[in-house]
Length: 193
Image (cartoon, one colour):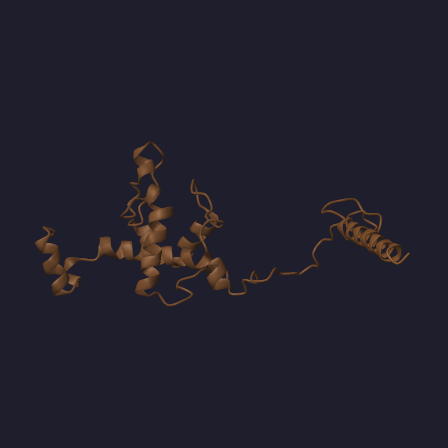
């Protein structure tokens, strides 16, 4: 008799543990988009409360996240443009922009040489005079045949690309006389007049 009581208790404990595990495994919950009789609209998935913003997605800085200031394309950058920012822009430009726009931003990229329509050069007056917000918006939203890179290029990287485009524009339009003597000497040594 001594052995049957502990064995029976162990058996009951085992059955209780199995039942508990099964109850937890098959708990009363509904899958996404499953029909529910609990809510009047019959949906188990509840819509977000109006005005809900996901963590990290507030985007309250209009200048940074839209490229606009008071409804107009921004004429300034939302942060200081440093050598590191321009270098980051160069690497992102090489990855995302160079295939169409070319290394110099002149519109002679690889895809153009293979028959695709040529984008405008960054060195035409219209684009040299365009505010930085214009380029940001083109990258984010697309323009003409160019599709949006909003889901491929992060916000800060879009601005870095714009800074690099400005550097490209300066590199192709600055007269030699406006450059420091050391730079002019280097260019002349390379055969550039």
